[in-house]
Image 1 (cartoon, rainbow, N blue to C red):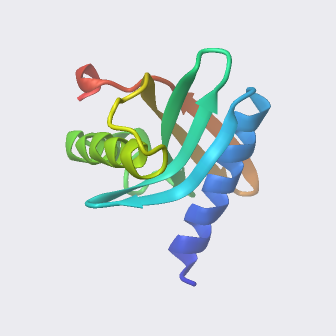
Image 2: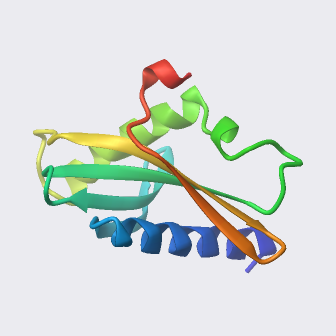
Length: 125
């Protein structure tokens, strides 16, 4: 396993634990769809909505912040993968209410910070 993959896996675990503490349920991890992957699929029972989460983990800002790496193209891939998730996992063509969130994990000198960016939309690009 590469160092980058290990870092990504660690970030996804941190993000999942962070979102579980917020009362969300984890439905799936690393859902692979044609053209993309969704890091975490969460469910908010109170709001009856699915949340497709993009996790970005950084150990420094040499390549920019996690937010800037979520592009319009990446967002489009997440939307297509979400549609695929509903068809394949839930066996439905009716798309229930959902949103796209990002969790930015920064790990620097042993310090871990999580930033939750809920409800990313087209206006964010």
